[in-house]
Length: 192
Picture 1 (cartoon, rainbow, N blue to C red):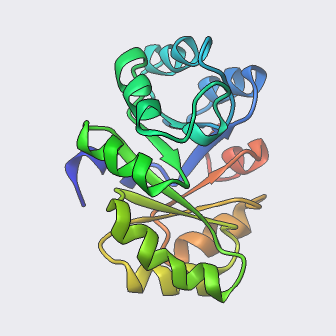
Picture 2: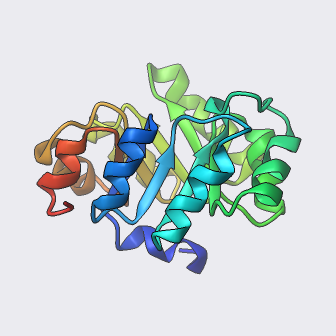
């Protein structure tokens, strides 16, 4: 695994946040990696700075940031105007450019059916992401399959993970870590 990703290996739980209030609670938790699922071009730099000031790592889901388009310039904006470690996106061309400019990249893939599962290889080949986030992350059989097919790209299980059982199931299936907005799941794994 790329040494830029070492901090993921020590973090089984990623706090995914959807509001400033939830960000405040994530900053008070033991979670050291935070995924931003909200924000806009006016406030994202300040929000990410709060994470950096707390000594934690931030990745921004650029598809969900109001005012950013699904174009390469969005990655340039995050790189130039925030201290984010990386970005999350469903857009391969955006991730490819983000990787070229030194950001950590997470390809978010919604696995809804076998066609979506088959499409992962095409998406991965188009952008060579650092990590793949599978959504929903509660299907151990799919996590195991994707992990075996796309090794050495680490897998993050995200979406619908609500408790310790979901977390342990995803990790046992081969996920490097999980991302969740469920604050109870942050605490259940010993992450306050």
